[in-house]
Image 1 (cartoon, rainbow, N blue to C red):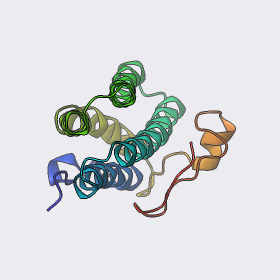
Image 2: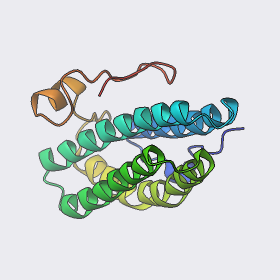
Image 3: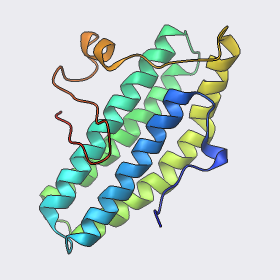
Length: 171
């Protein structure tokens, strides 16, 4: 069974946000499974961590642009939390490159997702989604497209959004 799962209290009601959160959880689960299956292989873990970090950057960029587009008053605070998460993922990757044990790296990733990301989704992302839903005149709300994020310079122009968890992404 996967360690991280989307539960009802983590659903936002905005399809794009919920789908991207499910993908982040699946990537985190894959990272932990890759590490276990590979016998604590540092290279495999670092590649999986980079893939997770790239997708999280894409997701955060989409949320942040949607916040700016909608004049969301909580944008600055929300972005600060995103930056904190990005920094923590970067710190884990740096520690791994500097020889931290794969076990330690996996515990840090698990704690980061369990403690930080779940709390962030439960409170901050759900508040933003409620704001979007309250402003919407349609039942379908979409985050900005990957192409728009590229044009805006928020993701690398060669970034490929994975269609499935097994797919790779360049970043």
